[in-house]
Structures are given as C-alpha cells and as structure tokens.
Length: 301
Length: 267
Image: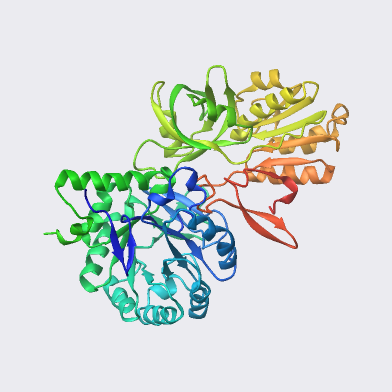
C-alpha cells in the first residue's frame, strides 16, 4: 500500500489531486462523469460577495497546447453558492476549497467573513485573476498589497487561507514571501499567464476583452520553475498547477516542491482526467518504489 | 449526455471546405439526441486542448450512426477532415438543449452555412410529429449547396440562396426572407403568426432573422454559435446576453442553449 494522502495547513487530503478553480464549476456538472469523493479536494470557481456578470464574449480561444480565457470571474455571488452549490458538494464528503475574489480588500474580507461559519475546509484567495479591472492581478503583482490583503483576510477567516499567485511578475519569490509574511497558510501557483490572440483576417483581438489568461500544457515549464523557486523561498505548503494533463506532469510538480497539485484546462478535454491522474500517480509510485507521495518533494537532486 | 468513443464510418467533402462525417455512436447517445443539440468532439492530438462543438445533422438509428457536417475553419476541424474510416474519435454528447418542437401546421426553417445541417434533423422530426405540417426551408450558402436533395425530401418547399449567386437567390437567407419571400403572393400563407420559425446560422444573420420575426410577429427559435471550452456548462466561456426582468443576464450557449427564443436575446 502506498500513501497518497497529504496535509495542507492541518487539512488532510486523501490524495494530492484537485481541480484548478474555474475549470470545474462547483463540481455539479462534472459529477455526472466522475465521483467527486475520489478527489483530494474540490476547488470551486471564484466566489464574490455579490453576483458578477463577467466579461463580454468572446471569452475563450485556443492557443498551441493551451487556451486563453477571459471569463472575468462571472459568478452568482456567495449567497447563491451557499444555497445550492455547497449543500450539493457536502454530499460527497470531499474537502471543499472556496476560491474567493473581490475588487477591494474590503470585498475580500467580506467574503471571508461570510464563509466563517460555513462548512468549507479552506479559502483560496484569488489575487491573481488577470481578467478583472480591480482586485485580482492588480493585487497579486504588488508585494505590499499581497501582504496587506492576506493579513486582512486572515483576520476575518476561520479556515486556513491559501494565497493563489500570479506568474505575471518579475520575481515570484518576492510575492510568495509577502504572502507568507501576511500569514498565508499555503500557496497555490500559478494562475494564468496574460496573453493575446489576434484574428488576422478580422484585424482584431479574438477575445472580447483583448487580453486573457493562458493556461494548458504550454505554460507548464514556467509553472514548474516557479513552484521550484517558491518551494525554496518559503516554508508554506504549495499547491502546484499550470498545464497538468497526466500523472507524470503531476509528479513533476511534486518533485519541484508541490505538496498537492491542481488540474485545470485538461478537464475540458477529458472530465475524467483527474481520476486517471490519481491512478497514474499510484502506479508510478509502485513502479518506482516510492511508498509515500510526500517523498516526491524531497527527492530532487 | 455522456462521454464516448466512436468509430468514423465515412468522412468526405460535400462542398468547398464543408465536410460530412458519419460516426458509429452508442445507442443511448442516438436515442437521446434531438435537433439543435451538438457533440463536443475532441481533436486527437495534444496540441489541441479544446474539443470542437459540431451540431448533429442527422441520426440513423438503424445503422447506429450520427452524421456531423462541419466547415474546416482552423487546425482542429482540419484534423477532423483528415480522419479516415475505422479511426476513432472521442466525444461528449448530446450537449445542450435542442429546438423545442412546436409542431404547428406550418414551419419555416432558415439556415445559413453550417447552420443548415441541424435543420435537416429538425425537419424530419417535425414531420414525424405532424406528417401534415407544411415545412418551408430557406437555405443560404456561400457558394455550392449541400444537403439540398435531402431537404427537398424532408420539406415541402426549399429555397436556395448563395452569397455569390452561383445557385438560387443572390444574397443570404435573411435577404431572401426580407426582400423576396415576404413580398411574394404565394408566401403570404407562410409569413404568418401561425408559422413557427426555426433558424441556425451566423450571428449577424440570426440577428436579422430575429428582427424579421419580431416585425412579422412570428414565433422564432434561434440556435446561436459561440466559442466554447468545456461544452458542459462548467467554464462560463460561451455567454449570451438574454433579457431578465428590467435588465439582462448571461446564459450559457452550451448548456442553457444553443437554442433560445429569438425575442429573449440581446443582440
């Protein structure tokens, strides 16, 4: 028997695999294809206090081995999430991580406060969405604001707080240290890389919002590098993500220093991919004589 | 809706840049499929991370096949066009909500480009529901027509339009409705509040069809297109603005649509 379970900020996950926020909704739609109770956790799509409309169409475009999105965190707000999505998720007995977003520190605080008494296991602070005008990446690329935002949210929350970092910075370790100084319990990285696609026949940007976040296998080496850098710069556990589509990809992130990993874009092509990845990690461990999944992050030469 | 593998039975061009693929699909997928729904078909290489939504043109329950008619617009659809009989593809479906089968005495189907194929499935279903229904189809092509013979069989009357004048009326199907059909005496019976309109095609065309339907006070359903990622209502990548109270809200083309009442969309 190999051990697949990991622990992040005192929360025990049965395995290190979870969806990346925004690629899995709240799990309801994909629950017809996969058993949510098999996942290490479910990370839900960003939740703000009030409903957000998101960005204009076109919101998605494919790139080579990746995709651009500019959804703009459309969501029905915290109350709708608590009324319908959370009760549904709780039926599966899986850990629930709520990604929270806001336009200002006060809004982040208010969402954290709203979830204080609710049965969710962790909060993921979305200070890295590249598709909203205020909040999001505007906070995540400024070390002082990261520290301020994290510490403000920590004061209002009961659950451990994961700071989700943007790769669109000069020095990711500076931002990670700021999150640690602010009191973050864990770090997740990376959010999407800001990109653009142009329709040369229409002579116009493809996305309605012109710029969008690049995700998928195309960004994986960047994400692995940043995971490695951050794991050496802070003591916090890391949830690594960025282009993971197979068990081998997941192991790569863990060897780079991630305690757990998240799967994003790959869910769109194969909603069952996380189940394959969990099985694949276990198989790889057996084949290579690794008893504990936590050993991966200590074995890089 | 389910995920499945399907074997390609046939795959051939039917007009310039337009291909027709027949796939061998599971019985429950066939049974569940209705006109206006689509399959979200994966491109079989790793460079392409997003499946492509292809509307269902026809189902053949006897042979267990689904026919997809698609235009080669980019690398993903070019990949589909290279697939050979016997090869396998992965798909999810049937996705979305199809046309609501309002079966009256008269139906007017208006299609443009690769918006035409799902209307064939619809025409056959409408006839199945009410064999006495009078079905008129207005089909707009860029140039060479496709599926014409089958529409002629399935409908009572078919009008062909082409953007380059190579066949039928010169102009698109919205032009034909506005400038030709609405003015012709024999069309008086078709352009009436008792006729239900069903339309599928490019957004600009649908917008004009919706305007026409509003002017003529005809009920009208439209199947809209949008770029999609998940195809399952998860990612919110394919929004369409619809009226809601005094304002509007975003709905999902893939899950809430692709068919909407023309009057509820904010164009």
